[in-house]
Length: 256
Image 1 (cartoon, rainbow, N blue to C red):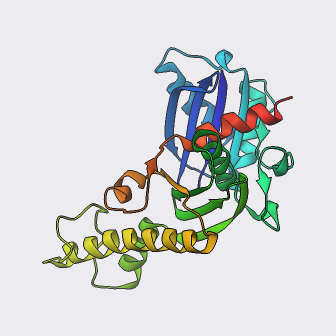
Image 2 (image 1 turned 180 degrees about the horizontal axis):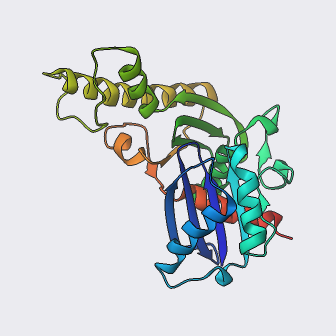
Image 3 (image 1 turned 120 degrees about the horizontal axis):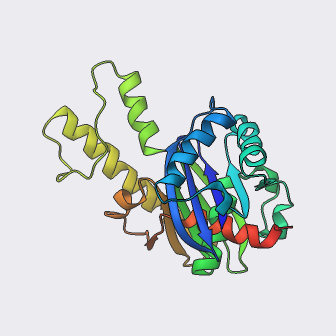
C-alpha cells in the first residue's frame, strides 16, 4: 500500500491507499517537536487499530508546509519503514502540474497537491478552496494550468484574533448560527465570524470568475469546508480527501 502524509500547520492527515483507493485515513495534530521515534509509536498504534504493521507499506509520499518537521518524517521513513520518502516539491512541479504561475517554487505543497487531485477528479477550469489554518484559493484554467490564487486568514485565526486583541470578548465555538442578528455577545461573534466568512468566500469566488471570464467548478476541502458550504452560494463540491487523492496522483507521476 501507499502511505501518504499531508502535513499542515495545524493538522497532519495520513492515509493508506491501494490502487489510488483510500483504505484507511487518520488525522493527528501537527507537532513540530516530535522525533522519528515518537512518530513511530503513534503510527504503530494507529496501524494496530486495523491489525496492520509497517510491512504493509510499499512506498511513502509526503507533502508539507512545515519544514521543521521534515527531518523527523524522512528519518522515520528510513528507520521504521525502510523507505526513502518521496517529498512533494523535490521533483520539478511541472512534471505533474501545468504552470502559468511565474514562480512555481513559491506555491505551498498543499496547494499543489489539491490542484492535482482536483484536476484529476473534476476536470477544469476549477477554483479550489482549502479551509485550513489559512484559507487558500487556487484557480486552474481550462488548459489544466495553475494560474494563481489568494491566501486569507482562516476562520479560526480570525476568531483567535478577536479573543486575543479585544479584552472583553470571549473565545467562542465556530458554528452555524440560527440567526444573523445575535442577541448576546457570543451569538453576535458567532454570527459575524460565520456569515462574514461565508460572504467573504462567495465574494472572492465571484471576483475570480469575473477576472478569469470563466465558470469554474468550485471545490472545497479542509476541516471547515462542510460548515462553510452549508450557506455558501458558490461552493459546488466538498471533497474531504482531496489532498490524499492529489498525493496518490503525484506519486504515480514521479515514482521511481
